[in-house]
Amino acid sequence: MADAFSPPSPPPAPSPSPVAAEDLADAPLAPWTFSPWPAPSGDHVSSGGRANPLFTILPVSALAIGLVLLVAVAVILAVTRRARPRQADAGGSCSGDGKPGAPPSSCGSHNTRCGYAGAGTGCIYAGRLGFSAQLPRSRGAQVFTYRELERATDGFSECNVVGRGAYGAVFRGRLADGTTAAIKRLRLDQRRQGEREFRIEVDLLSRMDSPYLVGLLGYCADQSHRLLVFEYMPNGSLKSHLHPPRPASSAAAEGQGLQLRPPPPLDWQTRLGIALDCARALEFLHEHSSPAVIHRDFNCSNVLLDHNYHARVSDFGMAKVGSNKADGQVVTRVLGTTGYLAPEYASTGKLTTKSDVYSYGVVLLELLTGRVPVDTQRPPGEHVLVSWALPRLTNRQELVQMVDPALKGQFALKDLIQVAAIAAMCVQTKAEYRPLMTDVVQSLIPIAKTTPAMSCSSTPLRPALQHVIFMGPQCGGHWIESAIN
Picture 1 (cartoon, rainbow, N blue to C red):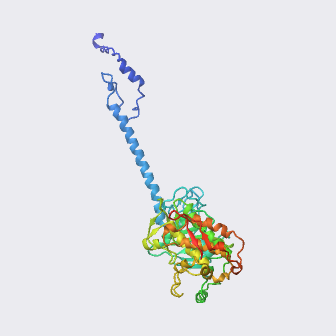
Picture 2 (cartoon, helix red, strand yellow; picture 1 turned 45 degrees about the vertical axis):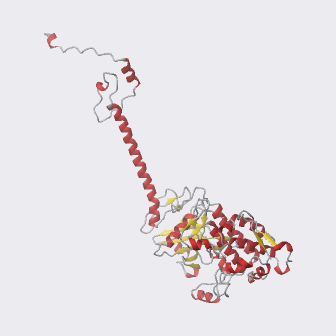
């Protein structure tokens, strides 16, 4: 009876084939312990010793799903990071303490986060001008609130106005730490040109550091206010020295509460130093920035003088980043100041670094003659400075006669002839005939470092000065010569 109710003994387990046992021994532990699917049974091995295809597909599918999720997360993070600079550009308000990782504070109705250029660089606009890592970086620009700058200028008092222009007004102010600064308040128009110029200046000057450029101390982008804070240049602009305001302009300015006193005329040696400083500034922009930066509005109003009359270039609101191509040409709309525009740029909109060279040549002619680039009150044939001066730059007698009377003959004729040759090369009609700013710098260095100027009347006219060679770039495969008759 017991045998009738006892369960049948299980059949003896078949011994696995050698191939199946070897496969199971080398296989990794099954990853299905915590799987939502049922645990695998012993029938996952076929009678032929091969693994069931289901258990090969499942790990591959899980791995593929994981990779897709990782890619999706990476894309979302990239889109989010790219959206932050756009918000900073569009929002217009940027505040905070300028320290990386610090939470942004509110400025009016905006609470956008600033784009940082790196540790210790402060809060600046995230630039989209296409700079490479080779462009030198300065310490970051400080962020000011509108109230801070309002206090610094006594409520933007008219007594503190040091300059005006189409962009707005420049005020002299004293910051909280006692630093005297020039505070430029931009006028925002419906075309938002002021907003564009503000962003370009902040982006450029926060990245560039040169003793020949006016330093940017900080800025304010508080709601609808756009202000730039620069180093203060106590001797004003080069224009105020070369072209002081006429009596009628002075009377009108005094009626507005402005104190305009004509500055003393610049002597010859100071003019040479200013010419060299300006050349070095443009050399830095063209040759030591990658890609090159084209100022596009270089003129004597944008050349400022410090307490030692060293020149610094300012106003980069119209600056353009050049192309990395061999010709470095950029096609853009024509902007700038009448009388300083290169012919090819004014007629076609094709902008290169040689466009700045032409503008520099006009400023050099202003230093030589004391004349403005365009003066319709002069006799016919003398309205445009370049067309009037160019044929006279190679004639010794006419060259001496065209020199600024304010110099009273106190200059060395040798220096005058060499500077005139440089100016003649810079204002050539064809851009390819103009020198590089590096060559201009090298040609001016020995002139600017000579002994103090002597009276032209006491300088003998030596035959050796009748034929001067300008050691500049090669044009058409030969060196340019400037003959002095």
